[in-house]
Amino acid sequence: MSRLDSMIRRLMVQRASLDWAIGELGRLPGPVLEFGLGNGRSYDHLREHLPNRDIYVFERQVAAHPDCIPPEDRLILGDFRDTAPAAAQRFAGLAALIHADIGSGDHAASRALAASLVPHWATMLAAGGLLVADQPIPADGLEPLPLPEGAPGRYFISRKAA
Amino acid sequence: MSRLDSMIRRLMVQRASLDWAIGELGRLPGPVLEFGLGNGRSYDHLREHLPNRDIYVFERQVAAHPDCIPPEDRLILGDFRDTAPAAAQRFAGLAALIHADIGSGDHAASRALAASLVPHWATMLAAGGLLVADQPIPADGLEPLPLPEGAPGRYFISRKAA
Image (cartoon, rainbow over all chains, first blue to last red; front, side, top):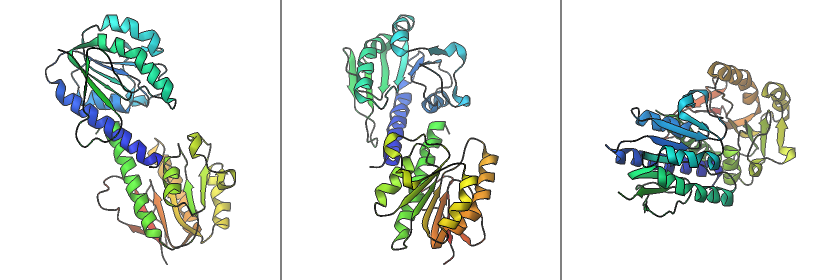
């Protein structure tokens, strides 16, 4: 599989996972939290499909397309490990959806980062809220869900127990 | 359409166009020329599917994934407008396939760049050779071809008259 193939696969499983989660949210209230803005593609997708939700974005350093930079009061800048603890207090039990696209080329480091963040994510989620991530996200109180049909590839969805 | 949607669309039409061209090449001899390495995805795709072809890459400044950097003797560094005239002499009538992914966010500039390069590309192509590009590529001696079926989006394929 070429890097072109794997990028297409990655973006398609990301989109399928997000679209499934967006459809699942229904009337569950609460903000959406995105960890990892990157170039802003998934943020743009979320705000297009969830125009009435507050979307907060966590990012170390903004390098997104200028059209895809969140408003200043929705952007939490800094290393995720530094910003997540305060955010876990601020959003405790509130988030309807968390999307975390935090992987780098270093697989071990990406997994370790996700493992350090997942307890905070579990705290932030509302009962019944969804965590969609590019890394495995095992955690107490989070039920792993299958990927939507027709979405081959690596992405991970969990739901917080109601 | 979100930026995530349009990126998926763009990569899929690029891959469908390249795959179609790769299948068309058959026994037409000659090197492959790629204008615009970017992060190296399409270069990786071409070298995976055309392992016996020489692939020469033109790039202003290499910023590709380390695994996707061509060997030094296959890399022609510099502004395309500066390197294309000498390359047109070097590869005159030889190239089986040229792939040009040269667009930037500035649509007018991208079109102008393609317009300035297409006469050189036409010179480089072998009779029956294919030009696959992300920009419209009208030129004398190049016959525009339809995109392969099931490839919605903007990509452009032409064949040099035999």
